[in-house]
Amino acid sequence: MTRGVLYYQFRNKTRLLRVVVEDLYLYTAQKVMSAMQSDQGEKGDLWDRVRRSTAAYLDACLGPGYPTYLGD
Image 1 (spheres, rainbow, N blue to C red):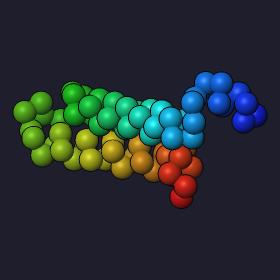
Image 2: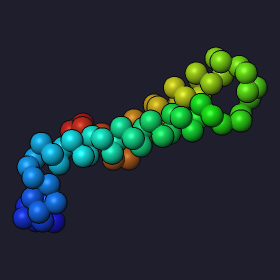
Image 3: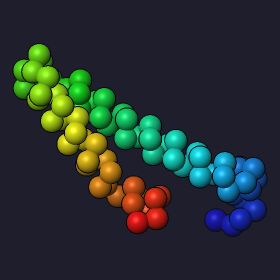
């Protein structure tokens, strides 16, 4: 991908970074919400939901692409 193609889609580097970070945030939030709403375990068990959502957050953060975006 060339620089010209990127600047055609995005005004500047700041806008490009903002779109990448927003996409990453939405992906992570979607994983966490999905884990919180899953039917595993007892539906009313708050701590089970906290554990599942925390595990989903960490899985998303350790997944492919996440460290690359943030310059690991």
